[in-house]
Length: 327
Image 1 (cartoon, rainbow, N blue to C red):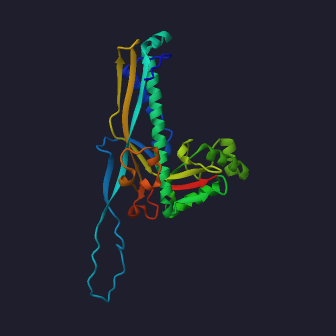
Image 2: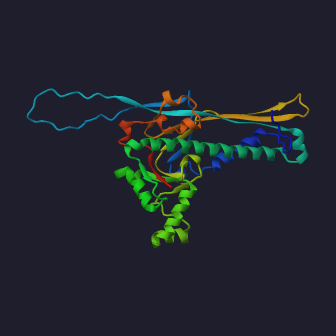
Image 3: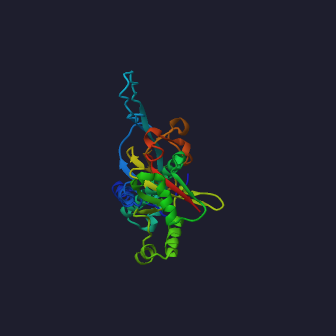
């Protein structure tokens, strides 16, 4: 059991949860309004390991030609159901253990230390949620290859022409793409390309306004590992997402407890927590048989665990969006 002795703190519940909540509220770099609702974060208590919602599938050949010269029997069309499936992932905090003696030695206010550790945990929770959202969404978007949702631009680095080609994969539904999610390398490649364009409307915006032209959509820049495909050279994904492409729901009550441990040479304070959230991807259902409950990062990142609902996806246009792959 590793017990810290150099920088002790005592957890005060009120101060701890104050810092924890404040950090979660502030860390909204990719959630909700920041991504125009493409990656949404909500609170919704759910039982079990999955969120399942049924829907009526689109009826094929619903409208057909009527033959005015015939009196033969018409064939009935059946209504069928499908389902959306999201998966719940369970997470833990800590445990963290420190001696009270070390806390006394640094002479810090217990309330202050509790608030700071709460903020640190809140930040870590937010980052972990963001990475899981990108991991699952990237896997699902790439799984829509059969629907033509991938633009392979690996012949070069990202460019505005490449963004247009990626966006074009949505065809007449391109206006539904609300934001881009990209690695910082891709973003700065776009900065360099914008300057090299030597077009005032592009280079001027980049140089004088500090913005990169991204076809009127915000760019969420985050150095998340799921946006990198390791190779020689590495390849980087740029995702163009529609509204609510990925929805995270904090689906269980957070449970953070503290414990005073006696019987040791020094009195020890321990903190440990648990929480869970459910991930759903637009136009997809989580494959329960393949992925199983409480998937790890590897399972979340497998496209085969996110099945395209063909009746909804409309050759990919009903899914989470499009993706471009660049050097």
